[in-house]
Length: 141
Image 1: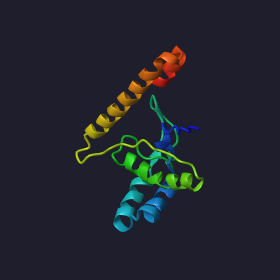
Image 2: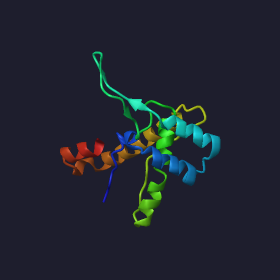
Image 3: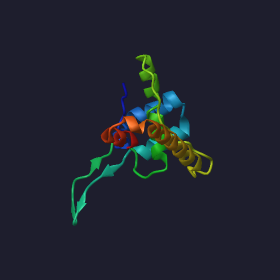
Image 4: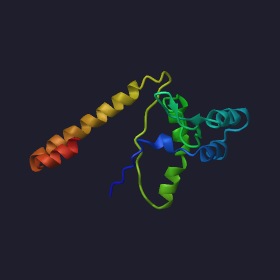
């Protein structure tokens, strides 16, 4: 059985109180660093401006600021316990991560993804003659 998680809007679902708890108790961030992160996440508000008409301000209690440098890191730290939860139920899993280097160039990551994609495409090519066109398209996509 294959279970895929759609995390396309996952950054919007991060509960600030849970994240701050995990940063302190799972990751071990304390003191000034934790205070800075708490300040970064709290007292944020949002509103809609439509042609000069403004909605009321609402507090932002979930999510990390979009396009922020900290967003992916905070999301990864938020998700840390997920592996343990899955393992506790005896389920084997494998998460496709991002390979980071010191310059954040993503060259190593792109090389790895490309190599893996070509590997799978070659394997599909080997069995293509026994697949229907519809099934082959599904595999390729």
